[in-house]
Amino acid sequence: MKGCFMAKTHINKPRRSRRLVPSVGRRAKVCFGRSKLPVVIVEDRGPVGSLGRRLVRVRPVGNGDELAATFEVPADELVFR
Image 1 (cartoon, rainbow, N blue to C red):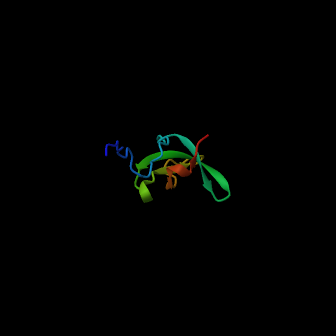
Image 2: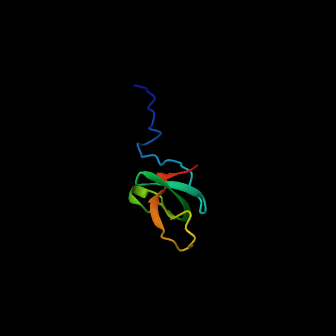
Image 3: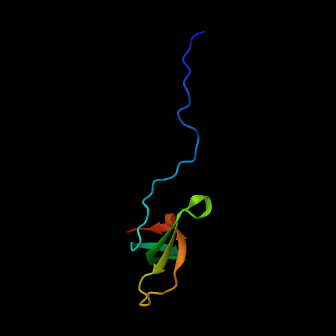
């Protein structure tokens, strides 16, 4: 019996989204309680979160102190203008 067998061209792997990598110094907003807090991205921590989530360190905008409290958030929770 002659036949043509096709090999699988892809394997069911989870696809990584090709989202824009946020750049340092870019302004964004983070949901903080019921409001959106304006922040500046201070550092890109890379894919170190759970399941390879990209984390970024942010600083709230409007503080005169450059060493204001910074915190880390997942990059996919940032809202860009």
